Length: 335
Ligand code: TXA
Ligand code: MG
Image 1 (cartoon, helix red, strand yellow):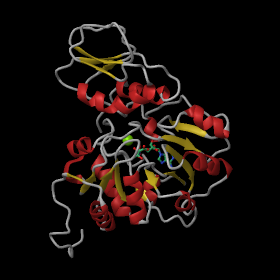
Image 2 (cartoon, protein in one colour):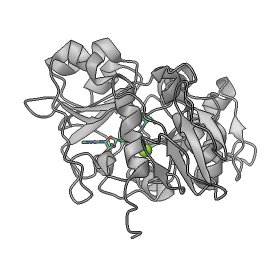
Image 3 (cartoon, protein in one colour):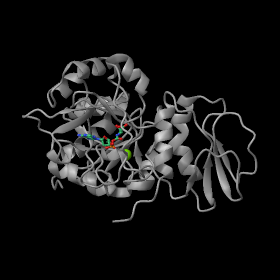
Image 4 (cartoon, helix red, strand yellow):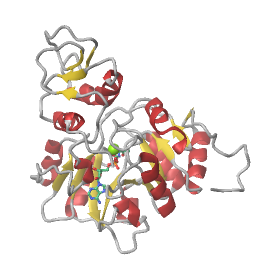
């Protein structure tokens, strides 16, 4: 921790969301420069950022989230040139970056020999996950800091990802020095993760860019179904990952007493203690943006369970169903 900071320039001990104007960005840069953690908005979810080149800062991210050390982090950069300084790009990577960056697509690529990113961020792998976020606040921060920023979603490990600054403040408390408030995230689901280290590109995590959109650019993706808690290829694939406290019941067609209803589109199900509709008109983009905030809102001891209606599995529905399945998955034993 820096001792030379004056009281006036030190971040406050308890975190109120900060307006992301020039002064807010400057404070965030100072915090990152001194090894502290900063939460910032992206178009997908809020990230918990730290200087990716600092082992101590990256370790602090794992600590703040209670995240298993074998689960590597996504590193954020301001543009493709910054990414190419860290990893080996090839044709597929160039095409995908050219099409989707800035955007909700993360590319896993081989680390360059001179890659300055902390090995901790790669969790012992020879690869690094990178993306350029499509959010002016995130891009302002990355441009001003001028170094890569490691940032997983700004929630405790295993909990639902934050899509507002208030979600971040509520779950991470003072582990984060500053929260840049950019309002609600427009996409509301994490980025799509594609592994480009092997011969065939692999969809490691469905997300904000649809698998169909990616396949239109580089051809067929491997879509492994081998979810496993034992040896996750991408640890974000842990069976239970985005979980509320309340049990989830998927593909609900009716309500049993005491259940809340997370609905989708027009329907005739009645009797729910509380109902929130992901998208009354049945629009998947709107549903993705609402998913995490609505899961949080229904996650109350007042509800015996959350009954979730079926959401179609195409386009963004693939990522929505992925998060719902994990949220409903078997509880992991607490370590
Ligand atoms: O939308 C997002 O991606 C958000 C925002 C903040 O950018 N970030 C995010 O990061 O979701 P995180 O750390 O929670 O998710 C990282 C995902 C995990 O599924 C992790 O296992 C995978 O990326 N990952 C990271 N590095 C990897 C690597 N080298 N090889 C394979 N998978 C990797
Ligand atoms: Mg996460």
